[in-house]
Amino acid sequence: MKWFSIQREVKYTQSGNKYRVFSMYDIHTGNIFFKLEIDYNKEEVYRLDCLFEYEEIKEDLKLFCLTLEQDEPYYYDKSEFQSVIDEVNLSDILDYIISAIDEDWAPKSYWSIKSKEEDIFIGKLQWVIYSYLVHKGLLIVEDRYFGYNKSRTEKYTDRYSYYNPLEKDLYKPIMDRMVDEKYLTSWDQQEIAKSKTIYVYTYYKLGPVYWRGINLERILDEV
Image (cartoon, rainbow, N blue to C red; front, side):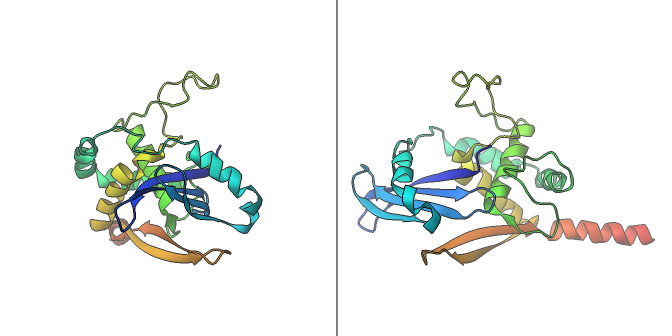
């Protein structure tokens, strides 16, 4: 399976001009190994950074990014997700996360957490939220390669795959709810790349709701 993913964004300069941002990162570690910032018309490069080991192919990575659709390529109304964000069962999602930790069903390319005390990188948690929503039938994503790749026999993606365009509008708001309601805790961590560029990554842990339940079970077992 693919070991990296690409985050694509449209941002604005202080003067109000739009520009594009492409960030390629390792889905196992969350480390960004290539970043491109370019004007909206893909003509003037504002920033081109990569880790040392990718220096020789950075122009190829740039060209690859520029072949991707970027504008606002995913046509959906964000309000369509609001009822799911507001009403999805957080306790059920927590149980699903625990099952991914305890059992062996989650693909190793997306999930490597084997301890309930372990830090969970934001990208891994976004994947497990996606997986839960698809598994419960709350999200249906059509396979973009269906009909083009002979190995693809299913029209819709399953819980073992991933669809990253909804990270900011669907998965992250659900994760924010889980933090607000103490199902998860989160913090930001700065890391410095070999190029001296500072990146900020978000990590999560199981929150007080989970540990309170565990402690209550222990007390009841002793009664």
